[in-house]
Length: 304
Ligand code: GLU
Image 1: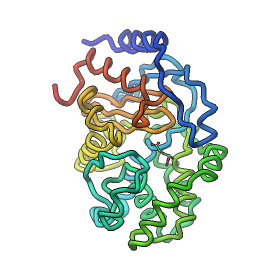
Image 2 (image 1 turned 90 degrees about the vertical axis):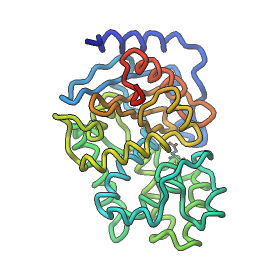
Image 3 (image 1 turned 30 degrees about the vertical axis):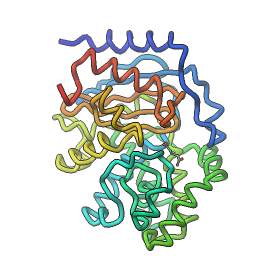
């Protein structure tokens, strides 16, 4: 039996000694203030028991990890018709790239690049007020985590809104192609609040259990849907670093520019890691390294 507490503690101790920590996202001014010296790793077992080390009780901005939850909600509401508006292929481009939208008639490559996530948010907004959709998102995340103490950081949302030129451009470009149902200001306003959800690493690990597919995990989506969300996380969850993440870690994962990563070891555990410094693709540098070590120590890669 693997000694998980010892492995998790050892990885956190090793990460504390890492000098090369990456750079915090600074295009959202509020995120630029976060101390890059922080690190947390949390492993949630199907029972809900969490093994953690480091700053696992410190809330951070989940940013694009929120796209996993909004995708689950959108598929629940629209089913497969969502795929008329967004694809399921890796993009090989930066998270906020507009390049493919021109060639591909305003249909984003996948639900995890910004353009795709904006379409997903637009789809769940249809006919609802933003605050209703955001309340639904928080309710979903709180149910998944089994924890009511999860909120949106308004300062982070305001800070992103004030500098959201690229995301507004993506939304307007898709509107020009008939792939946006709401005014871009409404959709982007909702999107930046969704990205500004704050959670601790321990809460995020617990919240990912609905994708683990083991007895004891919350059943918020069907097993077939969980399998497909995991497939998209594996192929598209790290933008143009998705291939590298699959190669090094070998688990479905979704990163955010706040430095968080949610990774799923199917049938075994939900893992969250947080370290604010990012690599060139906008994925947590130490987060990826820590997951690589965890998988090596546990043998949890889906590739054996
Ligand atoms: N809110 C961020 C943006 O749209 C999310 C990006 C990310 O976390 O990768 O720029």
